[in-house]
Amino acid sequence: ITAAATAVALSFTAGAASAACDAGEIVIKFSHVTNTDKHPKGIAASLLEQRVNDEMNGKACMEVFPNSTLYDDNKVLEAMLQGDVQLAAPSLSKFEQFTKQFRLFDLPFMFKNIDAVDDFQNSDNGQAMLDSMQRRGLQGLAFWHNGMKQMSANKPLIEPSDANGLKFRVQSSDVLVAQMEAIGGSPQKMAFSEVYGGLQQGVVDGQENTWSNIYGKKFFEVQDGTTETNHGVIDYLVVTNVEWLENLDADVRDQFMTIVKEVTETRNKESFAVNQQARQAILDAGGVIRELTPEQRQAWVDVMMPVWAKFAGDVGQDMIDAAQAINA
Ligand code: LMR
Image 1 (cartoon, protein in one colour):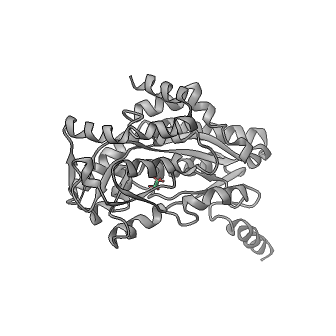
Image 2: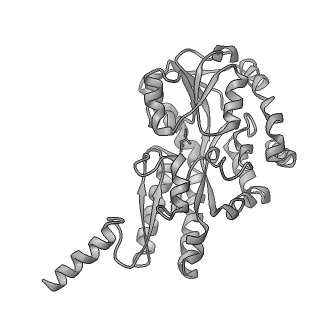
């Protein structure tokens, strides 16, 4: 009875934080907003959780809270600074309160594909960005890929003028606000968890996102169709609290960082394929996908490109040049 009571007491202590955690283990709560399956971030988060719990058993344990069940992206960084959550992977568009550097990734048509994004992130310029918010208490550990963005609405979008007067949901990024204004749309910042309802109820008419998000959250079901524009990127920063990381024992920190690095390399290679599978799943489910001719796509480039000049001061012309050199 004593042993059982002790076990119950111990599991209760740990259980309050996580079912996967034993007493004495460092608890790593990882909050994110997407699906767990058929999604680049969801799959990577699950793999990270599994590896930490297998390989660091007795030292640390991880519990992933997907689908905005713990925090949405607008709250998670504050929660992290308060120590309520240890890991998150918000899209790079969601760091506006902390740095203007990431605006580079939101500039339309900055990167031609996810490989170019990968090359930039792995360059010295990209790697330096991981440390850009240390002063604000946040440490970037890795970039995780999602993929290229597509545009959807409650009517066909072929010419940029088709977007005139439409209300578009955007992530909490002023670059994306400017981009939607450039096409004559009316942008509204909204949390990811509210997009489906917003589209369904007509609070907004359209949105931009990756195939995996459009499929995973069923946006295609409440839209006329999706136009394959590949006009921008959604990528993530795996981020933690500087102080929390510093306070880990060196061996625990090293092991954790190695696992993060390996999971990043393994899963980033698969992100394109995961999005293409989601694209196919949309078609299989009866969703409409519209492709553009090169001339039609160029019209979107022409109306969106002036957005760069507005934010060149924030991101630095040298960064834009470096990104473009990689694209070439
Ligand atoms: C969005 O808000 O649309 C995305 O950033 C969600 C995500 O995490 O992919």
